[in-house]
Image (cartoon, rainbow, N blue to C red; front, side):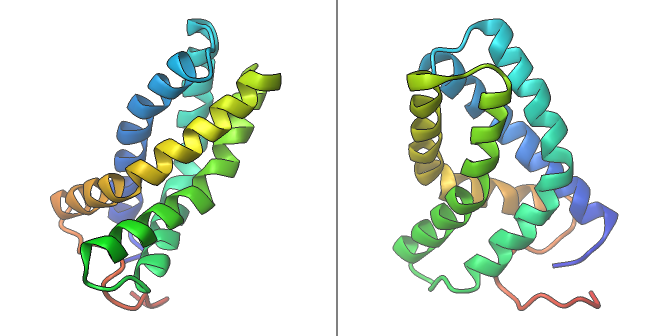
Length: 147
């Protein structure tokens, strides 16, 4: 995967679009946050996605190199990559935005379950966005610091 501005923009676009939509659903309907808290969480989330999207893309590429060609393997590794990287960040976002007590834990658990389920769909979405930007999909070739 390249280390270009285009890769940064592709990974950031994919992360912001995909997780703004899913974050709203989790925060409002699972964590029980108010609409103003959801708005604050999404603004904070978008701001945090800018520096995190590309490192996540690189993390996912590295994790996905372990996946086999089968659907189950792809699903497992994509989900593991997403949960291991994003759930701790998401927990911080909703805590700072006002979630506490049982609502905080429901939100974190809801995000973990959601990210387990969305790992592969997001990975496929990320690869499609990368293709739109003229980039190869991730996780298929060893990364190089010189590329």
